[in-house]
Length: 324
Image 1 (cartoon, rainbow, N blue to C red):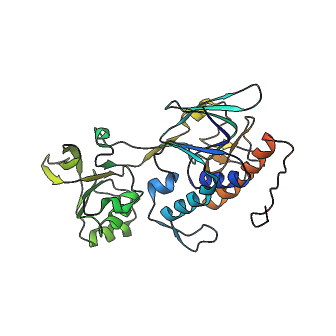
Image 2 (image 1 turned 90 degrees about the vertical axis):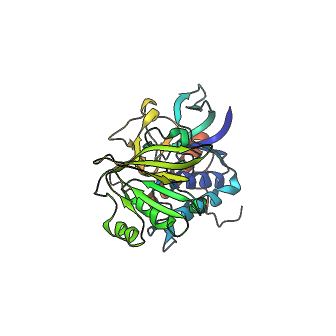
Image 3 (image 1 turned 30 degrees about the vertical axis):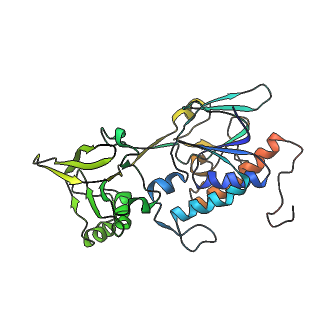
């Protein structure tokens, strides 16, 4: 059993900043997330997009923001439990909490902060594709360089699909986009940019089969209207089919829930003792869902959790620039 002072559920920007702030408050921390990479929606949906509303950064790529947050928390050695869902919560007689994941990991903690954005966040699977995960199939692109000199097939018609096509085209041997319709959810300007680069965009087309030995080598495509099939070389398939989000097992914890959000008070406390929420999942009158707001909320949650754990401690920890 892992023993920590604080467990953060959600490894998006708010959760990662919470890991730093808990360390600043001398609390040991673990962070659990259903996705296999830290960064939440930023990593999964727009790692290469520029974000303009993070304080102190006139502009910063999503991937760089996540990297900076990880670096900021690193001196305090948070434990990351990735690719696992926080599934069960129980309270011990002394008020401490035990959280179990769907993979069997057990965490004994003094408090929990839920920063899970819009809840459990999982990619929509490519039909019959899971056997190729880690062998050529992926659902998001945290590192562009891993696709250098590969034939890349991107499946989807949303912003993520065309953003990745735009950024991978200079690195990959070839990039092809396939979509089951002839209309795209992606911004029209981005679609035009990808087309102008000479990237083939195959509409009314679906993946019929993935082929290869130890790793992916070819993809069989089928035109949904004519039935015509074509075989393309592909060592990488990126299934940008969107994500599903719901509260998942959190809904069974006994939390008060309103329209997939968790109401909190001014301390960021939920209805459950020693359980707090911050970021997009937290709700209160006047709530504005921005990354910058989530940073402030998780700092509030950490400071109030510190007092709940040890009533003799101070709510205000001092400034980080103060000598310690």
